[in-house]
Length: 462
Image (tube, rainbow, N blue to C red; front, side, top):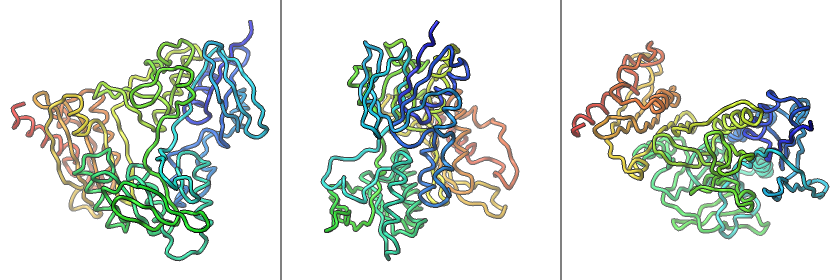
């Protein structure tokens, strides 16, 4: 009996995790695997790009987990610099373009995995395609940015402008600050880090100012101005104009689903492909999708969202590969956990913000505490702010946000577990967390916030 053919579109986290897991379960005699990747690299950490740009990660190849050659050694026919340009679902085939030779051809499939990822948001404004304006999503993007920075040479008073103040924005602001640039962050929102509530975002703003990063809130970009050489020279906003030698777009990303849309596959309200628990595209028995091109179920809210994270992509790939290879796996959803940093400031969140809770009709109370990451008397203890959101009456934990230093970010994992388990804030107060003065006060900051949230629930009649 002839081997089935699995075609994978996309050669990064979700796609190659799926291919690798399927290969572990089925040999090449039972399953032929053909994977298409339009870029120059596979299986790399996009999350590490800001730290490569800053110089904290020395070499580009340090971000690559597995090369094309290594995948091919595992009997995966990986075709680099080859872009799938058309998907024929009724005919069970894909059309590919070899970017090097210009050749186009069709390849049939028995099973298909779509892992096309996401693309940086690039507003349709004058000058957005000018030299020196960069999105940062792939290693190719990172290399282009580094080449642009290096092209400035020893120019004095180098100025970098970051458009957007989300995770990508603040990380790229740090990267350029580390490289000696004067950095301005233009943010159209009320405070940086819109994934936090504004009161917590204000703490990030204050810290960024203290680090020497100029953050301008309420500034919507209107156009990019260029010099005689066609390179970016200024960024114009409705709040003023800012000089720039390089511009980084940190506005966020959108799911790359144009190919799937054109083929009639279902997408959700946020533009990502819709899948079932097995990561199978809804209504299509032999098509799976995973990574940054899909929407995921947010367990606390009971709704789907587009969340572009490598952790999710790798899990999706494992689930897809298990199912394609004859095993079984599901991806039940997420609670929305994310961490980041700007210099020594750590930022973390999980679950719902206040506006998320309101959007799904939940009534809630909040509790915010200031504590330290170590016992107050222990050398090096630094401040940390924890905000907790709990459902009115039931006291069910809805979300946690943390801004601080000295190990603040990873404390959010306690809250992520509590959210997944459906715990109340009162149940959280009894958690047996690790304690020693170098690591935590007697009452860990998360538990202090839980105690205060319990009091808020009771005070509101819960």
